[in-house]
Length: 88
Image (cartoon, rainbow, N blue to C red; front, side, top):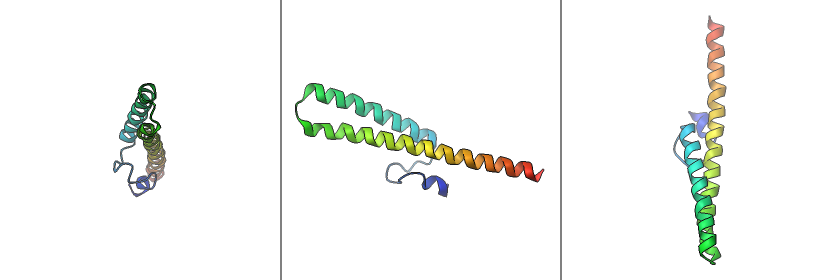
């Protein structure tokens, strides 16, 4: 678990579940895109666009964190499998 914490910033999410991080990242990304286009179509105020862009960036970061966590877990699963084969 210590290596999983090293795969992403802890202030993005306390979750160490890669699947949950990837799902949340995807949701945040698409919600951000939707709100971004809705905001652009309905207002001429540029400052309102900052929040959707923040959601998009957060979504991308969470998704990448989940992908990195999956890679680390896969590496450790392979090592554990190799160790168990070597013991036999």
